[in-house]
Amino acid sequence: MTKTLIISLFFLFQNLIYTQDTISLIDKDQIRSVLKKQETDWNKGDIDSFMKGYLNSNDLVFNGSKGPFYGFKSVKERYKNTYPTKNEMGKLKFEILKISGITKYVAYLVGKYILIYPENKDSGFFTLTFVKLNNEWLILSDHTSKSNNYK
Image (tube, rainbow, N blue to C red; front, side, top):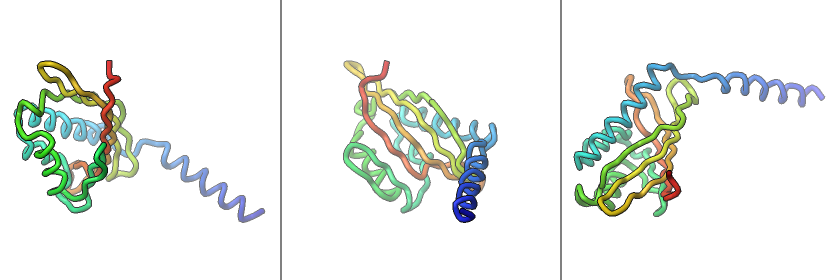
């Protein structure tokens, strides 16, 4: 009985801690700025600058329809192979749906993307895990799914 009570109190305490947002509005604005810069760089056709929003680390992972790509170099090559020209990149628009802190130095973002081309558009959803290192928010994990159900 005592063990059950202790475990229950532990989970209740954890819930109270993690239901509070652990990052500031300034941090959320900095995270939004990362995506705004990526959107601008993408629309210039500059994948190298776009990649500056990602953590330059072997721990970086991009997970999409072709499975996971691990490491900064692999993720960058994936982007360059999938979108070899500015025309094939289209015009990118992000819509941020939610930003939440997990800890003071880790946050996640849920959003939508739209890629607009002259003849059509692609769209989908993504979940990003951000880490704050040296006072800078960078993407550690990107899970993107295509879904042409965007209105």
